[in-house]
Length: 132
Image 1 (tube, rainbow, N blue to C red):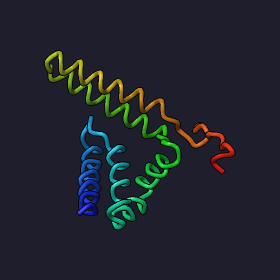
Image 2 (image 1 turned 45 degrees about the vertical axis):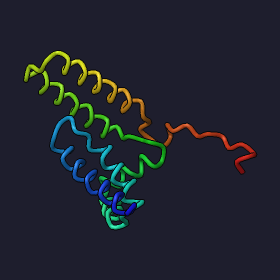
Image 3 (image 1 turned 90 degrees about the horizontal axis):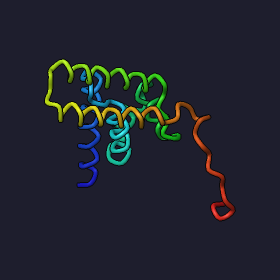
Image 4 (image 1 turned 30 degrees about the horizontal axis):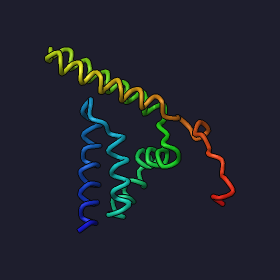
């Protein structure tokens, strides 16, 4: 039963990631990472598929090695969020929707841009004698 739950999460997340590439405002990176996590627990086939594709593999490996987000992905996210904001403004949405969506997008951008871009920027925690 538990394996099926992980498989469903992996497949749905991967489908949402593909949709996120096409639809502004829907994140792709987060869904790829969620899919990798779930497939590692429930579907080795999906996990092998993800890790065999350089685009996915680099994203997943970066996240596993210090929650790194590459500069390229940061800029892609920024552009996607900007397009989503422009669409929101063009459709003259109610003010409360504009404010809440803008706040969410701003928080997402702050989180994304605060993440390290390379392994050199990841702080290494010193190993204490008790951990050895």
